Image 1: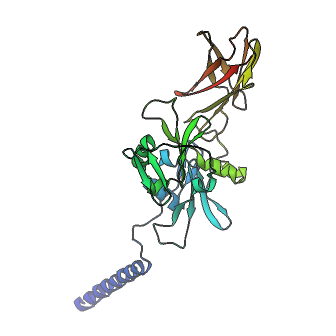
Image 2: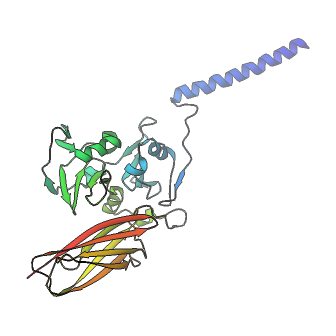
Image 3: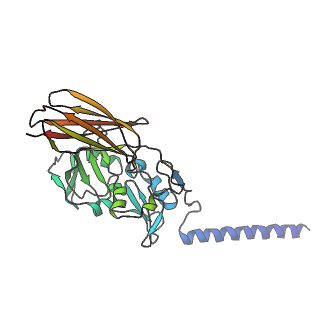
Length: 322
C-alpha cells in the first residue's frame, strides 16, 4: 500500500515537471515572456476613442505622451493592409514583421507634409544643436523643448530651418512641427501642432473614422484654439469692418455658444471692448463702425475666449487707408 502510494506521488510529480518543461520550451522557442500580455484598451474621454494592445503599450512608453502625441482621434483602422491609428499629433503604424517590442512605428508626418515656407536665418553656435544628416539646427526654446520631450527618438531630426507661417515661428521635424507663440507666457511659448489631424485631412481619410464607438459623444473640451481675421485688410477713415473669430477644441471641432471679448485698440490711444458668442459653426462675429480714423495707422484687435477655466487669446489687425 505504501509502495503504491509513493508510486502515485512520483507519477504526479513527473507529470507536473513535464508540463513545466513543455511550457518553458514554448516560451524559449517564441522568445516571449510568461508575463508579456497586451494591456487592456484604455478609453480617452477627451476624444471618445480607445487605445489598446501594442499601440497602448507604445503610448505608455512615450515621455509626456499627452503632450507629444495628444489623444487618439480614431480607433485602430486598416488602410492598404496596414494597421494604423491617428492621434492629435501623430500616427502609429503596426509592423508585425518586426520583433516584439519594435512593431509600433510613427509615420514621418512632418517629412511627408513639409513644404518650404518663408525661412528665417537664425543660428547661434552656443544655443543651437546642428544635425549633420539633414543640415539643419535646433535652437533656443525649440532645443529646450526638443531635449525635454523625447528628442530624436520622438521627433526625429529637423528637416527645415526656422520659418514664419501664419504669424508663428515654426520648425518642421520628421514626426512633428514645433510652433513658437509670442502671445503665451514665458516658458510655455513652444507647443506642438496638431499635425496628426492635419495629416488625416491632408490624406482625405474617411470622416467616419473620427466617430467615437461610444455613440459619438461630445468629448470634454480640454483645449481651446482660436483664430481671428478681418473682412477687409484695409479700410477707409470712415468705414465699417467685420472681425471673424473661429473657436475650436482639441479635435478641431467647433466650440459652440462660447463667449469671448474683442478689445479694439484705436490709433488715438482709446480702446473699445465688444463681447461676442460663437454660433453652431464655432464662429463669432464682431461688427465695427468708425469715423475720422487717421490715415496710414493700424487698428489692432485682441481676442480673448474663456470656457470652463480654459483661456485662449489671439490678435488680428487692419490698416486705415487714404
